[in-house]
Length: 308
Image (cartoon, rainbow, N blue to C red):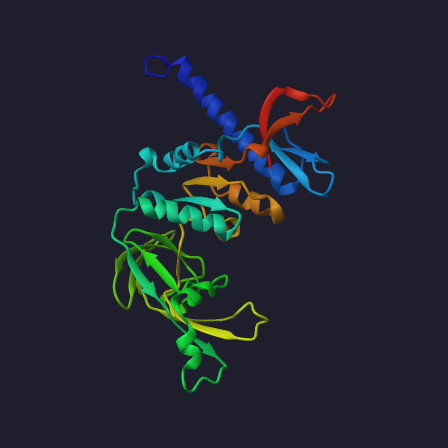
């Protein structure tokens, strides 16, 4: 009867395999969240004798190696089929990385795939709490110097955006009912405002984002406070693990090349998708090693497994 309806034994086996893989991934997430040994999540101690780190073995995850540019292209093509930019994809799919340097690199790679023309915005910067009546200090603030003055949660002096770019809101804007880290997609680029469409809301809204004022201390002994007038947006094709909290995503490329499971961030990033088939890990050669056997300490069939 199943065959009459086009259901073959092979398709039934595929469905069972999919269900089992989904159960394994759910079990893996439980193990990571509770630091509990599971068949799909092995807790390994003493891998590094110089630290107190506990390593996690993930024998069932799918991954890409970061060793070659070809592999990076394969990883991008998994997220963007054919390596072609589709503005619908970044609305629900994200690359998660451990630090801002990796995030910036991925953001640049994906934004370069967006064929829309870029528009650059330069902030208006000045020192607060400084007596500079004759403007000597202001004249010393070249573009290169201002570009070096950055702080977490503050937009850069010089930013470049394209229509269809996906961004994070860097500061809450109660008047527009926007919270910090809200994801939006750019719809228009004007001189004094940027049009966006909200993502992740039941009903998307079209808004215009103005420049706002940011104040932050410089790292040189905190002796100077900088005032920056800039658009509160940051590219979000990629983001750090902690910024993905509370978000449900369609697909995730998980960059594990820099200690992803520190402070529980690895669990946060790994649990952003609903299906095991919607996440892939991007790892280094050093993170692939045989998992130790539970019985005699030997490797499991000599197979390489991901350990992070």
